[in-house]
Amino acid sequence: MWSRQRMAGPRKAIPPSFGFRNLDALLLPARNYRYFQNWGRFPFDAAAREHSPVNAWWLADCALLVYEDPENIRSVLGSVNCFAPASFRLFENPRTGLCGFAVQGEDFAVLSLRGTEFYRPADIVRDLDKLASMGTDIRQDMKLRMGPFDGPPKFQVPVVQGFCQPLRSIWTDLENWISSLPRSSNLWLTGHSLGAAMAAMIAFQFPDQVAGLYTYGCPCPGGQEFADAFGHLGLDQRSFRYVHGNDLVAKGLEFPGTPYRHVGTLVAIDTESRKNLLERAWSGGTPGHDGPCPAVLCLADLEPDPRLRHGESGSNQSVFISRIRHHGLDGSSWRRRHA
Image (cartoon, rainbow, N blue to C red; front, side, top):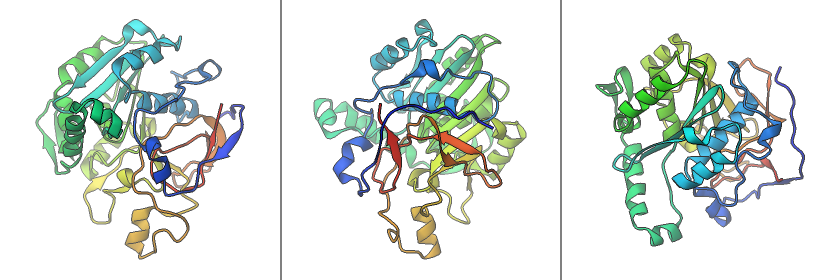
């Protein structure tokens, strides 16, 4: 049973609107966000091999932090004493839109990969290159054809081509970095959206080195063969896939009859109060009958607290999370915590 750790502070409900009034919260990087708040009270558990809500919080912040500029990332990581600032490593290729960072602690290493970027209009006006970068990301997202990939990295089982192609541009550097990690250093992978799918593919390539994979809003990275092979490598027990019930990105390839499959253990958020938009449409329900439907959902930030339930069938264990906010157009009645 997971330990019940709580953080002090008042709570308020996220406004139950369709979200256009809060459109700025949809776009990343987040503004006025305090990364790794109170980190000293909730140390990262590098030895964990089962689901850890504390590690989920750490890795969610890493998945959000990767959207920041490299200097901001370095600055934030430098303010958290458990990270070694000199170990910071940036993996980036503007041509493919790939961006990620790696950092090491005393006995662990984290690799975080960014998803699709949607810039604020004011940022685009200041730097028109951001518009081209956003277009690159979106074009990559649309490459949904599945098949084996000659690599690098090489996949003999079918994977979504648009999700693995960006890895080719950094693969040699990434392999060298992972090979250079001390034997005592546990590797933790995380990412959001497209970055989450790429993190799952990296875990597939390095099953012996990966201590844990935590993804947020992850689309299906491959088909049934990929999912079966992922499980045979023993990765399902170390992989946790956070999905809000209304997340169109995570649910968008799951129509009956499609060849796409998810991997890892599902941690479902707020699925009891309302059906997913796609589930309603497929079942003939009326979207919006029990609240506004979301248009776009992005990233969750969370911290430990006994609030929500684990979404995997057959499990009654609690997921100790209280502050979960998908930045996006959503009308659910989540509760967040303010410091």
